[in-house]
Image 1 (cartoon, rainbow, N blue to C red):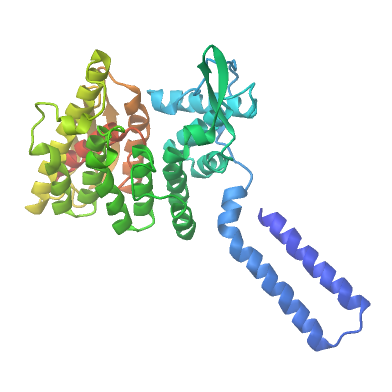
Image 2 (image 1 turned 90 degrees about the vertical axis):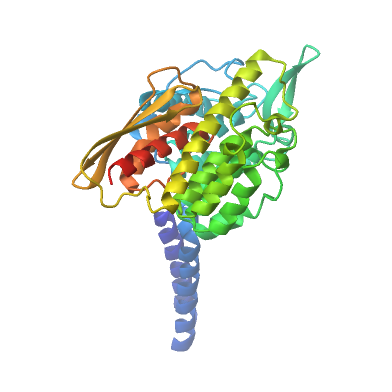
Length: 419
């Protein structure tokens, strides 16, 4: 893009120079023309920082080569990064999604093309490929309302569904601005953020809401981030639309408050469920849900119990911080420290933190017993991000909040052991 800008500027200069050569003008007019060109060129350069990043040629990492797979109606959502259990499997999922997107088009023959594109963008976001993620998420976000976005069988007839009917922007908009925020474009995040109404959960999905909150944090808009977390951590605003997600949103909210030193706020968030106890299942979080289905009750129970146990750990962490015991990366004693907290499947996620020379040099995470797709991206990517940043103020993985916060809680507990 920089080369294209240079060529454009050079073309302007050439045209002006030609006009000056063919006309009789005085030196003052020549100076004004030159200044006009310079000003115009500066305007192009001024606008180009975000535009260059957003529209520059895609640079794929070596591991993301397309992997050929059969394209059929059975591949509705495509391979999922969230449903992988290693970084190698996550990379493979990206390769397959890339193949699907690059070898299809949004027609009735390929009704899931835009869903695959959305899945590709989301997977790339989880793996830290922010420019690539933005490209695909932005494409889907800006689709016209009548664009094909999946299909369904109605009276034995295949009916195309539109973007307006599926409303993918309720989730992907938050992820879109999160990608832009990770690239450091503050003004553009705020401009994009203003395009959607985050004042009500009727307008956004829980996952989109928390992604938007992390985006606000990334650009230093902490007050706005708290507004979003305040909305999503309690079940009432959800009505009957997935109110149980408030219990995991609560974990992201409490973690955000704790790692920003707002211990009273962390206690406020976690007290919502910790004070009630894990038994019985709090029906406020499951209003309108199918409580008669054994399969759904297993899902709800896991969601509730794992959220409760991590909330309890964060609650204790905040109380200790108020007494001066703060989990940070300063003044650590060398050694290997371990801690364990639950994952969504109610099986332990074990964390081992290595401190050398007073610094955290490695974090090893393992979930040897039953795990689910929600833990995969968190186990694969969070440890390195924490080590690289020497901070627990890292975003939770979208749609893997429970596993993400379990890991961060255990690292915090290990850091306290290292004091």
